[in-house]
Image (tube, rainbow, N blue to C red; front, side, top):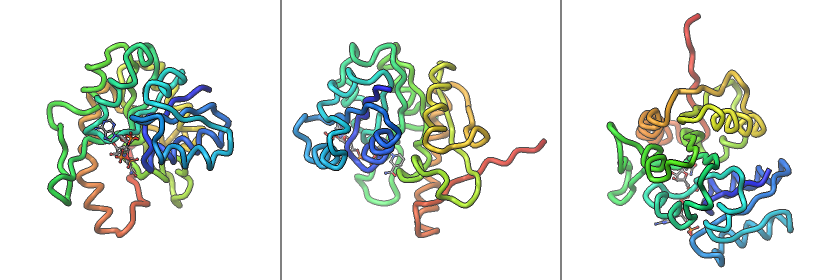
Length: 218
Ligand SMILES: NC(=O)c1ccc[n+]([C@@H]2O[C@H](COP(=O)([O-])OP(=O)(O)OC[C@H]3O[C@@H](n4cnc5c(N)ncnc54)[C@H](OP(=O)(O)O)[C@@H]3O)[C@@H](O)[C@H]2O)c1
């Protein structure tokens, strides 16, 4: 599949690398086509992937990933351009974290709104699916690196888009029973707020390699 990954940080690199390993045709996008992190990633992919601007990546992909800093996600998607985004599935893995006052971070949007909803409102013709934002970058693409089953979530308004997202998660190694559909894009509020506890847990456990497991009666 042609996939555009918007983002050159550890998440963009982890997801784009796994997607290339799986045989997908990936373009990684950044604000500048000359982005050094993207160039370094492309060199490691040995001709199996391409890089460009956010617009280049969005134009290329039939499915897109938003792996940009939460505070810059709307700007990044504006740069990608509505014409390159409209009608496509966008996996939104970003979190609206503000580290400007140090640790712990705060959420730039919460309670009655979320970054997932802001993106959906800004780009109503894009099929936004919030997913993978609740786990560390390496766990996103190596779920079997934990010793037990654990949970990952989908939130979005379009059921077919959520099916497409789940299919990709399964390619990463997530199991059907681990993928939990929590409803519309409004459920991003809770998925993003989980980061407040996630950050505390990372400090307490001394590792980002952990996740929660949903256990239900019956
Ligand atoms: N790190 C994790 O394990 C983890 C886990 C779950 C979710 N997340 C979320 O995933 C996202 C990516 O995280 P990350 O750690 O890989 O990288 P990051 O440093 O949070 O984001 C890097 C990307 O954001 C873009 N960006 C930053 N400021 C921007 C602005 N003002 N306008 C437009 N684009 C801007 C950068 O563009 P350039 O390439 O042009 O510099 C770059 O592509 C974040 O939202 C993060 O909260 C991270």
